[in-house]
Length: 425
Ligand code: SF4
Ligand code: SF4
Image (cartoon, protein in one colour):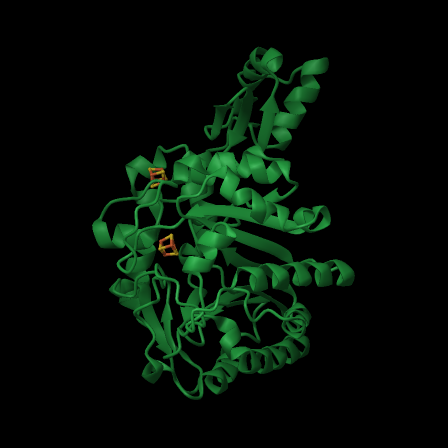
C-alpha cells in the first residue's frame, strides 16, 4: 500500500507548475492538463493500472510516493544523526591565512588579519595532523579557503603533494575544492589544483565590471574584473582540454544590480564555457564593515537565474544533504585557522561555541567537548517542534546554527534561496 510523501509540494512559477519533494529533491514540471491526474495518483493507495502505472512508477522512483509503513520523519532523523557522527570521512577547511590581496569593503574577515596569529610551522604541524587523522579514513576532503588561499600556494601545494602521496600509500580517496578570488589563478596553479582531484573551483564577481571594479580591488587600488574573468575562462578551457570532472562555480554577488547590469557578465563567456559553469547569485549583505543599502534581496534571485539559464549556464543547487551548511556537517568537519584553532563556522568568531578546539604541535586534535556538544545541540533541528513539522526540514535542517546559537531563534530558509534552483533542469 502506498501514500504520498509529506515532503511533496506544488509550486506555481509564472505559467509553470512544479512538484517538488524536499527530501528526495526531485522536481517535476507538471502540465496544467495533467495536474488533476497527478494529484489523484499521489492519493492512490493501491498499485495503478494502464497508463497511470507509468506515472505512479515515476513518482515512486522519485520519492513522491512511498510505502505506507515508512515514517519519513524518523527516517530523516536517523539519517541525519548517522551522517553527523560518521567517522569514515574527514573534511577539513584549511585557512592558512586571513590575509587577502583584495580589500572588499563588506568582507567579514576584514577585522581578522593579525599576522601574529599565524603559526610559523602551520604546514609542518598539518603533516603531523595528516599522519594522525587521515590514514584510517575512506575519504579525505580538503577545502582551501582564506583570506585568499592562493597567497600561500607554494606551501599549500607542497602539503597537498604530501597528502596525495599518503593517500596512495594508505588507500584513501583524496579530493579538494577551492574558493578563491581568482586573481592568482594562473595556468600553473590550475594545473596543480587539478592534480589533487579538485572537485570544485569557485570564483566570485561582484556584479558587472563597473560595480566589481569599485568593490573588489587590490590593496593598491588596481582593478580586477578582467583578470578574474580571463583566469576563470582559461581554467575552464584547460578543464575542457584535460577532461577534468571539476565543477566550475561562478558566484555573482549583487549590489543594486538589475538584469541589464548582469548581461555583460553572462556574455563574457562563450557557449561552451557557459555549459561548464554552475552559477549562483547572492545579494551582498550588510556587515559590521559595510552598511550600504542593497535593492537586491534573496526574493528577486529568480529573474537572474532565468536569464542565466537562457544564456546556457547551469544553476547551482544545494550541495548539502542531511545538513544545513558545511558547518552543520558532523564531527569530522572543521576549519583550521592560521593559529591552528579549529572551528565549526568562521562567519563570526565571536560565537564562542563555534571554536571546538585546536590542533597541538604533534598534530593531535584537542577537542573542547562542551563546545562540540553545544554546537551539535544547536544544529540538530529534531528537538524543535516547529522544524519537525516543517516542509522545508529536509532542505533547511534548522537553518544557520550560528544564528540560532547567538539569538535563540531559528533562521528559516526561504523558497527562493533553497528551492528555486531546482526548477531549472
Ligand atoms: S554562518 Fe550559519 S549558515 Fe553560514 S556557515 Fe556558519 S552556521 Fe552555516
Ligand atoms: S528553521 Fe524554519 S524553515 Fe528551517 S526547518 Fe526549522 S521551521 Fe523549517
